[in-house]
Length: 624
Image (tube, rainbow, N blue to C red; front, side, top):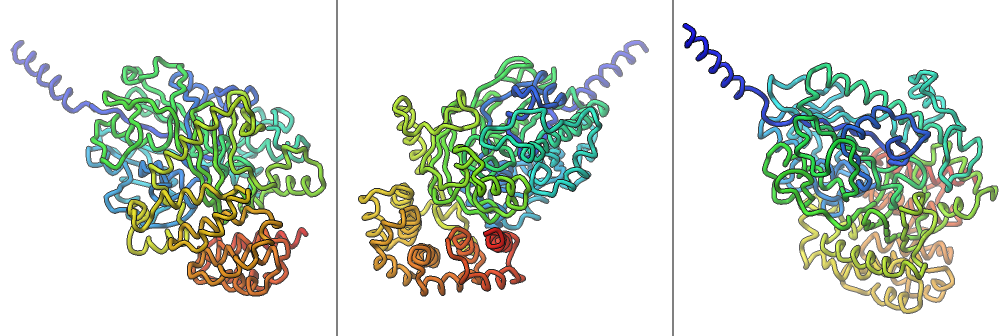
């Protein structure tokens, strides 16, 4: 009898050992639009973020983590697919272009290996057929999704996205809306006063600006409170000891000069990983409370999570595996990118080694604070424009309104707020040359598809994918295209001769970058070459024709160019309409286009981004 009892106990132990969960749970806590310098554990003594700080104390805090983009949907595209947007063609905010069928949302591979996958709640993946993509990746994706749907002893991968720090809360929505949805949710002791923090130097330190900027601190405080409730729920459900936690923001701070801009303030994010006692041996960065300076980008998240779950990664994932036996060698630098945000076009490519951030602006005629309606409706942006108009800003504060330098180099270790461009500093020449070379090598290696205009990506997406198209030397001779793009922003006589000559090139992308480069030339130089530009109005490729018309109208008040611009502003192709209207935002004399813009705003088929550009145009007129 005693032997039978012992045998039964042994059998139960064996059964329990097989039924017990073998793989770790993985919890992602993502917040929106937040730079690390506004969080307590990253050194901000004015911030109140005890729950995030506790995660850092019990986990590993990373100081060199970067989003691959500077606005939400491109960032999330890179996260969910594990492929940078400049390879996928998903860098332009809120687009819906096709991607190859073999590329899955990486939670799909976790599902295949028995994980329960849940997403609460944001998707915004910036791809075509998003609903099918979401269904394939997640067991549940909703505002109630959590680990609660999993079976007993089934491991889970759960994402919780907190929007309280989003740009809508910190600046874009009216102050009364912020008060209702942020301020009123905070207890009196949790509220941060207007005078209780330092304001970054590129914003004017005034009562009006402080009233607006306090929204950042209070929104992050509300976010931290909600994170605390989630972590308590994890404890109460008895899951904390089996769960590895990742915490990060989707990109940099959602304030003017941050989000949408290709500098450190737009890219760098807070990033923490917490290993419970059971999995502490998996940390290659040391014990709890350690700080790592390892370079991390969002391209690394998918392969890292698959490695944690012991799931074989697909061959198309080229990011680093940060954890595990097959941990990748640490990178020496990262390539980052920013493209169109809402109605504001751009193309910036950035390289960073963690200390230095080097960015190349390929459309330097666009200022840092370019017209993006979602920023323009914000009271803080309106205050900045008013202060600029009234000449109440210093040179640094004025700089966000001016055309950008074609390249910038910042030493973040000694200049966190990126106030001094080191490009012309002799002491940093070696650093500049090295980082410029690295950026060019990495962009060439990637065959960056965003050097094709968005109009082209939209067309080819109907029959193929940008991801595949960029790899064709015949269709997309990228080295020649990139070499032409590298001239954009240079204003010497040698450059303009090359640009004018290449307006006759057989390749439409090379001609496109020749005319884009001419947009950066000063008016006096352009005036010497009117006849060359008039010929370009006959170019069969619409992006070239539109750009030439914008140059000719602005410099010469050319009537034919005005007719062309009025026509394309109401084009059935939304990419051409948006391109045209964006040019019209920056021309000096807007009168001939007012009726057209009013008509365009009422075109039912036009999406938000086009109508937003129309709103910006009309608002500029109103304020003149």
